[in-house]
Image (cartoon, rainbow, N blue to C red; front, side, top):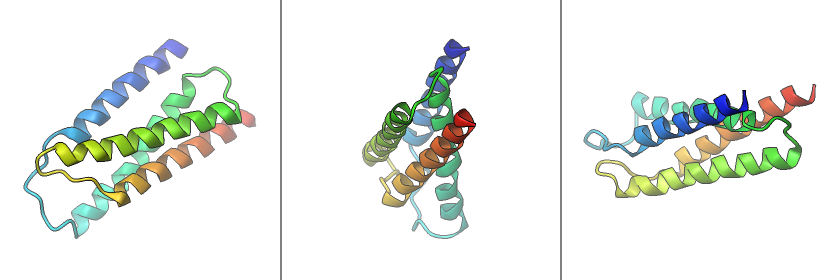
Amino acid sequence: MKKLYVFLTIAYVSILSFAMLRPGAAAGDGSGLKAVVDNCAHVPAYLILMVLLVKCFPKVSLRKGMICFVAVFLYGLLMEYLQSFVPNRYPSAIDAGSNGIGALIGWMLTFKKKTT
């Protein structure tokens, strides 16, 4: 079962990286409904990534959970940084914060589920 989660995590990271690093449409002013939806999409995307990564380990301790959280958070920061090199994309502190919130919620959900 662990191998399945490792495969799913690698596949999900690949899809997420592709989605975040492909050139965007012509840049707008970053406001409006589209911007709100885009920012909200980061939370579930990183929540799913966190859950998949935690599931790669048979027993999750607080330390392993924290390492997974830091890894997912750093991945989110890396994606935001790399977007600065992609046409019509730009890094955003709000997106980075949304990524971290999603990872934190995912960690809390999986850690609580594992301990009960």
